[in-house]
Length: 147
Image (tube, rainbow, N blue to C red; front, side, top):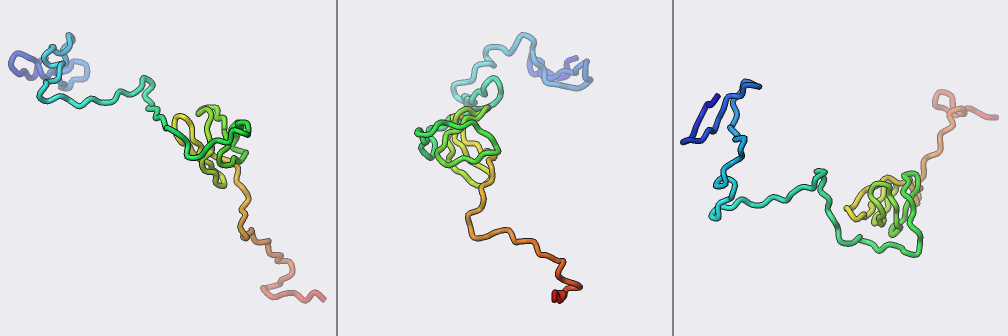
């Protein structure tokens, strides 16, 4: 059922399926005068998304040069990688390690940079985990005479 008209054109209808009011959309499409943007006020063009809905962004070059003297290694989270190493990832393809930290590595791929998990490297600083304290030689907080 027609709810509103502007001139001779229908603009609002009452839907029989959902029992609500909607803007009217002609089954024949909009007339050509409505489809074409006016030259005085053109609409800005939007970038079209790829058919799968995901935008793929290409980057120019990695921040570090790849070490071509070594063969590329297959990515495994249980291994650690050095800066400049080439990595073969099952989803992202071949990449170059740009930053390598304990537990994670930033890798440059053709589709962009990704932070990947890697094995933690032992700390090289002078700090170590404290040794456990042996409580068997104390009684009530005082040392026991061992003689």
